[in-house]
Length: 469
Image (cartoon, rainbow, N blue to C red; front, side, top):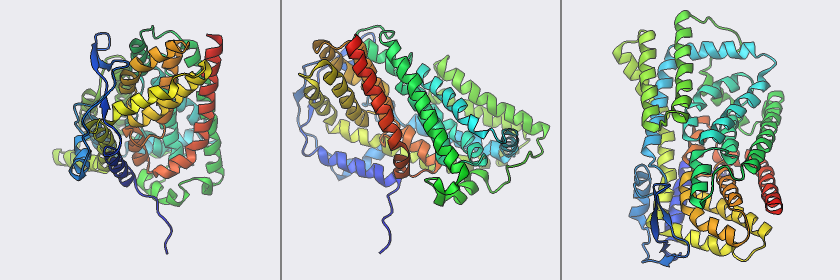
């Protein structure tokens, strides 16, 4: 009898769709009355208005349609996934064109040679940069553009793909968990709670700084173990295939010839990512603008490299094809939410959450609320969606229990950020792991001790917040 083999991300996600569909047959269907919140520009639930509605059990046809509907479902609290999936494909095309020029290979060789002996410093520097993006503007989907850039550098430096994925996913994740001025989490949640987003800033800043230090130390410790003994990698059995995939069997340990043309291409490459960050954080860009940026950048690179029209289009399509599996994962992940919404499960889960936190002491309430928000985050991975859905219910409950509303906001965003480090319904997690070729169950094995440390930090901070407020 062969050894049990853990299922792929596709099977895990489809299994969750089936599970949610089964629940729609046994869990009572319910909804809240919704009213327009002019400040948020969205419909929000009215506290105490939960009521049962007619059951809408999801059958086999609904299950099979869910991954498709997941790409464009217009009735969800989240944005549709089609824009994220297309963004991923445009990134793949852009990277395919740049890779064709050999500029990335030459650049990796230069970076690894110059950092010889100091490679470990990339971890705190890059994680801090991603954390800044997370705390300022909720950097999430746009991180998918950075995996193909950072993974080859990290592997060439003697680490593994898990280290690279951790730098990006945990870096941006701890920033979002400790959001300070993030408009998609903190600001929306504070508005929904009826308080200025600056209230409770000190507690969130503490979680951000302490959490980032813990995460950096955790990833550096793992990376050092892998560097000293590659068999310590949780993907050690995939080491050779990963090197082949990400480094294309080329030698990146020496400085290769870096032509003037390749320097120009790498300058365009770097400027594209710089413009990405600026566009999202300052100009209010989203997926359409970011996709257009990488399409334009790929055309400029092709012109500089003097590619012919057919060579360019073939290369772009081939690059996009390499990330097609990631795009499919994104649709599958959103399909879970589609089934929940269609089966009217979300309102029932939120109503059950109300009951879980009622009648507790102040410290018990705030930590129970954190636990409830952890549960809700699995079902509503969008931080803005969860804020709009839960805060109009949870903030009044907090006030009634004698807990400051800003602690309810902190509990919400901390829970959302924590869960979205592992959430299989969150396209950023499943997409990043797919790009990094890190099996989901191995990611869980890597990150669970860190999750416990961060959970202890959050609960301790929330408890202190109740005592001093």
